[in-house]
Each structure stands twice: as structure tokens, then as C-alpha cells.
Amino acid sequence: MISALILVGGLCTRVNGYPKYLFTFENKTFLERQIEELRSCSDEILVVCRDEDQVAVLPVLHQVRYIQDLRKGQGPAGGIHSGAWHAEGEYFFVTACDMPFLNCVVIRHLINAVKGFDAAVPVWEDGRYEPLCAVYRRDAVREL
Image (tube, rainbow, N blue to C red; front, side, top):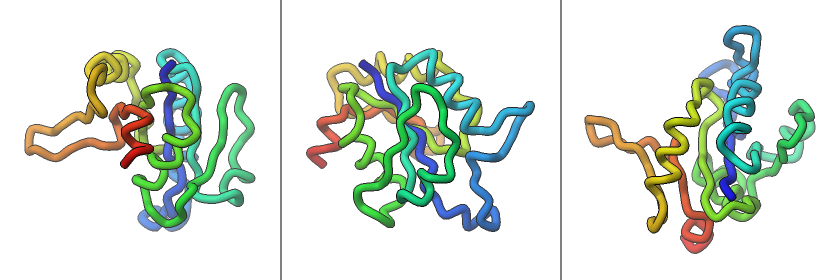
């Protein structure tokens, strides 16, 4: 089983408080676009929110589970941590809510690459990691 996490818990400080998951492209919100793609390459989708207030304002979507950070104020690492404790899959894919052009070909490649390891994290040509478009082994994150 493969789980997918969409991290939406940011404070939106760079966009004057407007939630990035509500940005639109071709008449769909970023969140809708991500969920649509992730349904094709994962068995469960979890939307990770910062708190219960944020969960309450999100749209109810079929076959999507909303969870909140277990440790508040920890940024994306806190969202990944929370997802590891709620995900049912042995491995989970993580993305940020402002990445609307997910591609299952890439996600499947990461899923295949992670087998036998704790994570499959893309690295840019300049050596920087892309931890919010990566696959992690659930138990490794729990142990960390």
C-alpha cells in the first residue's frame, strides 16, 4: 500500500495569508489537481493541516482523509512526522500544496527507487534536495 501526503499547513506569509492550495490553474484548485493525480498512483490520500481550525475550512472530498500536525509549529518536517503516524502504507509520497503539476510517472519512479531504503529524495543538479517531492518509509520516519 502506498500513501500520499499533501502538506497544506503553512501560514501563507508570502501570499498575504491566502491559502496556496486554493490557487487555481485551468479552473481547478491546486489541491483538486493534486488529489486527481494522486488517486492514480496511491492507495490513500492524507491532507496534513496545521490544526483543527484549518481542517474545518477545507472542502470535504471523497476518499481524502484530513489530519493535523501532532507537533505544532514544526513546518513541513512536522507535517511529514504527522503523516508517518497516520499513513497506512509502508511507504508514503510527500508533496507541498503549492506543487500542482504532480506526475504519477515520477511518483512511481520514486516508489520503485525507495524499495530497500528509508527514502527516495530527488536531488537537483546543484546538490539541493527536494524533500517535498519524495517517498519515505513510514517506520523510518517514526523512528527518527
